[in-house]
Amino acid sequence: MNKNFFKKSVLLSVALSVTIISSDPTTLLSGFQPKNQILPVKSSNILSPAADLYSAYLSNIYETANLYAAGLNADVFAKAVTGYYNLKLSKQLNQDRSILTIVDFNRSSCTKRLWIIDLQNASLLLNTWVAHGQGSGEDMACQFSNTDDSHQSSLGFYLTGEIYNGKHGRSLRLDGMDANYNSNARARDIVIHAAGYVSQEVISSTGRLGRSFGCPAVSPELAPQIINMLKDKTVLFISGGDNRYESKYLNPDFAANYLFPKADFTDPKPVIL
Image 1: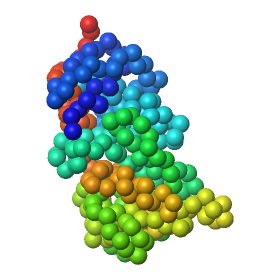
Image 2: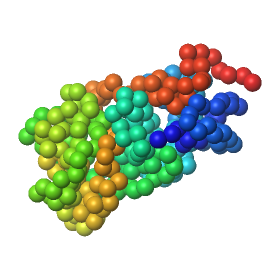
Image 3: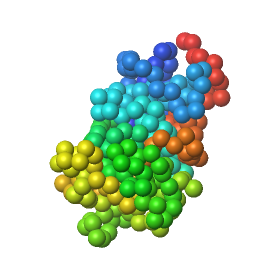
Image 4: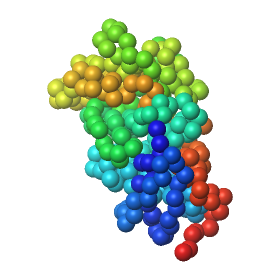
């Protein structure tokens, strides 16, 4: 896939204009003025030109896709996108897909805390409920594990694997990419599957969603659509309230350099035209 959609990134606070090397160069979208600047992960307030552009890119998608209104935390979004491009740079993704799925277990199970985003078109494809593991908590997921039989959810970045038919019907395997956090996902049979306990009716009767054995289970009505959208090595990022979580894929320098290879990434001084 070419990088045409990367050119939608625009300026934040300076009138910076660059052309990105790609298979089919296009002009950057201009005139966008984000309400708030989304800083890259682990970034200082003094940004290099590439990091400044990357921050604008994040803000552009976040606002264009109306993700704030959909309840997606901007910091969680920035981490997810950073991991997406780190994985893309490592050639582990399907290069022809631009789908990013985010789950935020900092939110109540009564809220729609799963978002499927098309980064290429800066659009939100779906926002819906998702269950967490029984061992992680009741309404809120507070504990996470990479251990078999813990029945807890696992944080981190995943790549979607193959579709199969199991006890929950048509399901989608997941491969955890973060050592010590979700790397046992396949061995634990952590998959995306349909579950009848993921519904508004269950929330209304019990005050929360039902819970899985650690899988990010979704509603039976939406499971076929979700599985079709996520299949074939797309990225899933599960965020939660564990300050110990860290990932080698949360490198904003790699993400910015991948998107904006011609910007002077090493110069931290502001650009003045």
